[in-house]
Image (cartoon, rainbow, N blue to C red; front, side, top):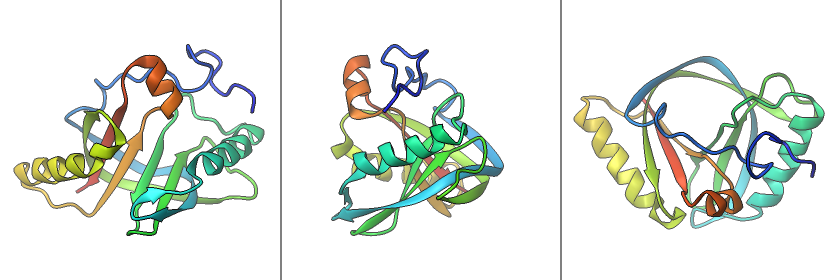
Length: 161
């Protein structure tokens, strides 16, 4: 696959700045995403890398890359998750979804195995703000190779309130 973000250090994922996402409120009105689904085995995605490469190739071919990548995952149980990749236009041969709402966001750093801990901390945070969670998304800010290159593995949790 051709380098998608040639202006990044890696040619892949740009360096992530957590400041605009940590302890913030985010409001989207009809934000457009390519929507896909990944099979999981006890919450662990199977074939996730291939799915993302396929989707990113379709997005690039449609000239629908966003300036800053945004990929969300919504857990659908032990055996699947929905994947949402922000796009700047329609992408042929794919499904799309528009997401609207008010979200509280927090940034976490560390290995993906800590996702359960982050989920719990996010739920406590939202409760401390006097809010309830309608939906929760995980925003994986870089691929594993880029996280290793940058020395940080940031994940943003977005709770729709």
